[in-house]
Length: 136
Figure 1 (cartoon, rainbow, N blue to C red):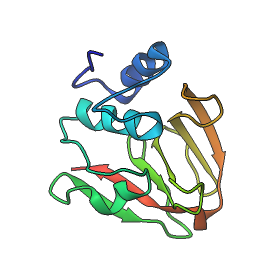
Figure 2 (figure 1 turned 45 degrees about the horizontal axis):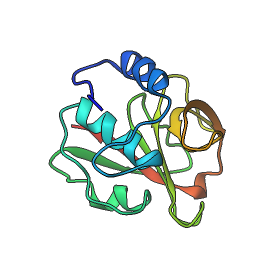
Figure 3 (figure 1 turned 180 degrees about the vertical axis):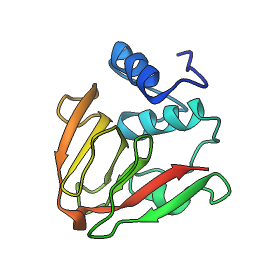
């Protein structure tokens, strides 16, 4: 798979939706999509086995780690990281425009359609999200 570099979030989203399934660096599902977004932004791979590990394992030299708070809202392009108690592996997604204090609009893989890239609107409980990674 030839991954793009330097695309805007909108262009990356269009690319990912056309792919239907992103497989990257031997990773699959939601982690592969997040890693592809990181690569597109010029970042190195984040060493992890499970999705929830991305938050702690992301290099601080490349990512700003923002812990979730009751009033926190991810920006478009942030990688949102769910706890492992949200499924044993957790989950990650790329925030899209229009997120608010109770809704995250996102680009996901393996959420509502098995292994597929989809756009989602998560009505989320804050306690299920560790935080988000913002590219430096």
